[in-house]
Length: 131
Image (cartoon, rainbow, N blue to C red):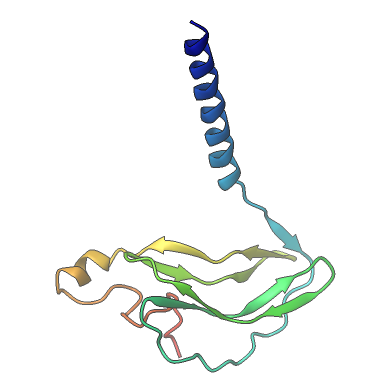
């Protein structure tokens, strides 16, 4: 009977830790400030790197001022497009939206040979090809 109680206790502990990890992963931080970011920097996008998406640079708020964070390559996620980090003006304040992956509604069309989705097959962020 003791072995059964021990196994049950271990199972409950493992479930608790798993639930805490899931809850922590879902946590988000909102940043709203009164100081808008400087104009975006003009940066030459590197040549396409197969299997990766380009995440463009952005102005990061360090608690006192905006600091430029260079663009970077991130491993591609099939069926998704990268939405870059950006600042959005909301009334007198500025709201930071972190970069994230979004499902590409055109992905299935592309796989079936019916054209490209929003990413236009270029391997980087949605909207990045608007020059």
